[in-house]
Image 1 (tube, helix red, strand yellow):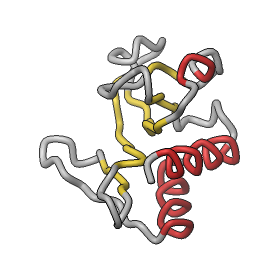
Image 2: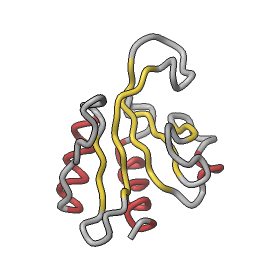
Image 3: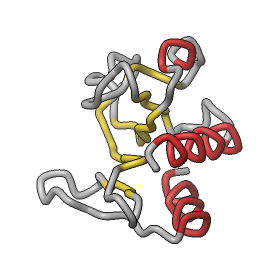
Length: 114
């Protein structure tokens, strides 16, 4: 699902992922060309770090929202990992949330960070 989301962002916004951290090679950010503001961060985090059941890692995307409290009640959406929890949410890229819903949230994040 991670690669599908990266392709969606690249095609819709003509923005390529930026891999900024050698220590975290699976993490990439997407930002606006005109103002350099981030609108998405994709990474891989251990389930334990996110306080999820099970072992191993899970791909996630962090997105800006103006209604973080509401979205945290949705299955597959968590308080933002490593971001401001008042303005960002973390979405599990494990199929819990349908792709179309994630795409809509990406579009919202893009608009909020213009």
